[in-house]
Image 1 (cartoon, rainbow, N blue to C red):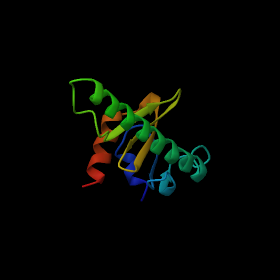
Image 2: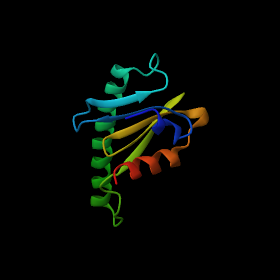
Image 3: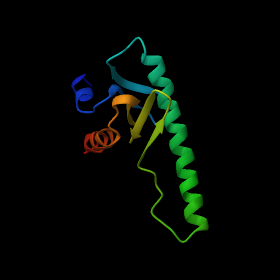
Image 4: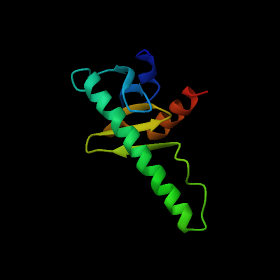
Length: 114
């Protein structure tokens, strides 16, 4: 993984891949003092946990309603005060909210899997 992937997404500070268990596999950060390997490893675990909860909620919603199409969750965004994470398929971007382009991040993540 190289830093060029960060230039494809406005506001991207880091990009990383992680295992099904959440362990960081590879990463690139434009600000390693702020988003180091340990922080990205932690965020990988957060992504796995959030995806599991979102899938549980989607299955529950489909089970009690006549509406389908929520499950399985393909990707998601969680927004913090200053930073957000856009995740899909064991890959994620960390974005600075002020300059974030969530749609571009989703697009790059979906293309990355092809």
